[in-house]
Image (cartoon, rainbow, N blue to C red; front, top):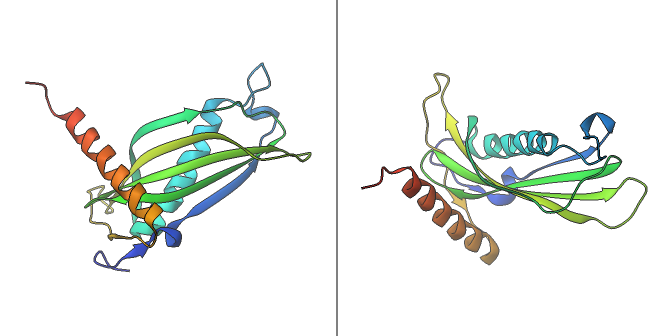
Length: 160
């Protein structure tokens, strides 16, 4: 796929499922936030390279919300999809849900919004394909992502 080709949200979506084990935990038996962040970084990378068809790097993590604790023995699902695309960057949304390995209902335990940038072998930003939006929800998420991108850009400008 060349830089002018389009790609849909579902085309680049990625998911990772992981059993949380004792080495992931702190002394209270909850999983370290860093272990969750590492998995978020891995799945968002796969999503970004699927969309860009190029190497991508993490440019920023807008927001990570840890909504509920994750425990040793939980099966955790990390589901990532591209929500917004600019010229060389894209926003990836990762939803994190968990359920006890022994059975039980799944619960939302976290979310993250990450900005990824496609780069060439020298590390310079390169264009990414536009995002093909198929549903009203995808269009709404794209608009929300555009606003977050504008807010990021505005926050980096020097104050007057």
